[in-house]
Length: 217
Image (cartoon, rainbow, N blue to C red):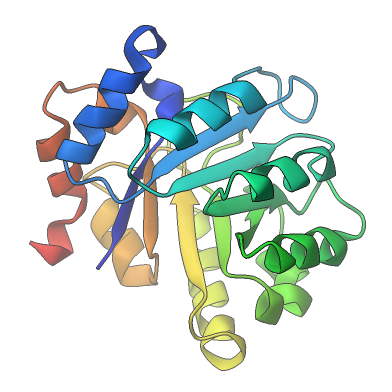
């Protein structure tokens, strides 16, 4: 079944614990945390203390997307806190296999994130070593952007390659996901849909999440 990962970037941070409880009641599958450093992307979000508190209060798996220039500085701490999923941008690390190996040793699901302009073929040599790929369908840094349809081709290429080299690989898509494009994304081979603005724009989170699962209902 498709997994829905609400992006807390769009949540109300003045009542974050309540927002997390509402998402759990709404049958979300995991929580997506966009960690931005103001360097790799032109925005700042939350750091390690907030991630720790979210992990403590959440009954859902926590998915940390590191949009930072030095992801290696976070990995030991995230592993110690038993964070469930961690993705590192291919564009930020010259020796990515080292960080992937570190996550695998800590029993954290390891992922590689790709910007819209990065060819998916660039990570094929590491496909057998990772648990998931996060394909960005907007240029990272800000919520509420318009979905870039060019990612469909990347998803199809990745799914075809993964079938031969890592059949259990999960494909995650983040950026501009809504009830209009979710069905095509699922048909293309996506396993995890990250949605921020679409879910939080409506007070009925359960209905918003349900509408993204159209193929499953």
